[in-house]
Length: 205
Image (cartoon, rainbow, N blue to C red):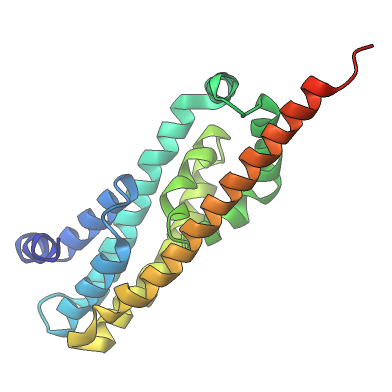
């Protein structure tokens, strides 16, 4: 993957790093934790302009997020509820509760979600489903992405040949997030199965 990223940046310069980040939104296996420090390292060697890298990667983040926003917008609330009704153990009320929570905390979620592995991409879809005002979504995504991108680009820029250390340490954090999500899913399934079992054994009137 590193060779591909290097080739992309050698061919396109800073816009190549931006393109890689845009694709990272759509294909999470392309981790920004590798792309951004590598772009910073390349800038540190004088092969890319640092400001161009920050601008292009942030633009790439916004474009990728907007693509997923429109996926959510095209899916819409009614289709989301219809899909939820067909999923095992999921109730339409679960989606409605999520919707209510997002309407209350959506702005903070979009902003801070851009700085959380795994959720960086996913948060754009519910924003689209709920039709968060496009300008608000774009501004919050731009601000959150600029902070995230600057941290990792500068880490690669300052670490030089040791830029790969960033991926190592952030990978630990990513694994923690994945483990917490998996635990939440397990708890949800256990609780929902217990509710069903209790419902079957409840006395009929």
